[in-house]
Length: 235
Image 1 (cartoon, rainbow, N blue to C red):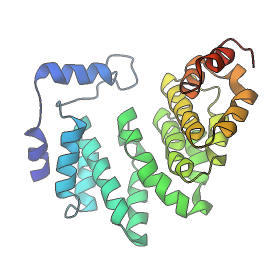
Image 2: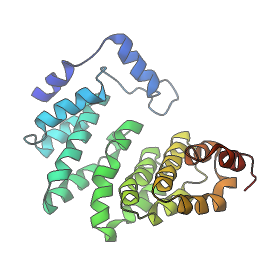
Image 3: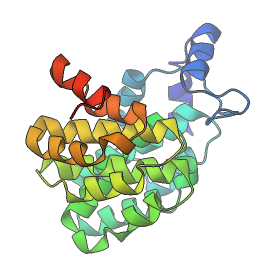
Image 4: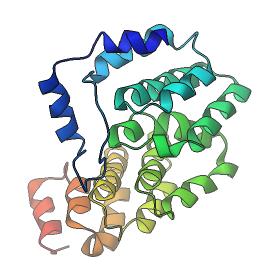
């Protein structure tokens, strides 16, 4: 594919590739074990996506998504987010189906974080009767589906709708994965940016049972005195 050759032109040195592998935890026993990087940065991937997204087909995107190379999968997902912005109803549904049916390839924190809310979140914001998929993902034993479920609610948060974020946060409250602790805390922090009191009230109810990382991410923007009150259990 021409687009693959274009991506390879932006590949950096082996040292950069190794740094990417370390950053994304591809070592033995880590959550992205054996993932392969060619060393292309997100800004460069966006350049290529912007050039190709209008003409590339969903079948060609699927081929990219099935790639063993992390950046090719990320390119596929970013292209889908660009297509989603312009897509009509029938094409939106095709994009979402492609996304939901291929989550095994959306297997990196950046792959989730740069796509979930723009694709699944956007669609479900307009099709609330189909939000069960988020709860199915949240209740699965799949790390990436769980992260997709909470990050997708970022689109709801932007519209001042927090109920699903809180419900999914409660489902994931006792999750053992650090990546889930971070993503839940991040979304709770996003709620707080829109409405401090709403986040505060949720945290008061749950902070003592939260994993420490989740709590720290949630209260990152709080005043230092209030942060310490939460961290030391004084609320």
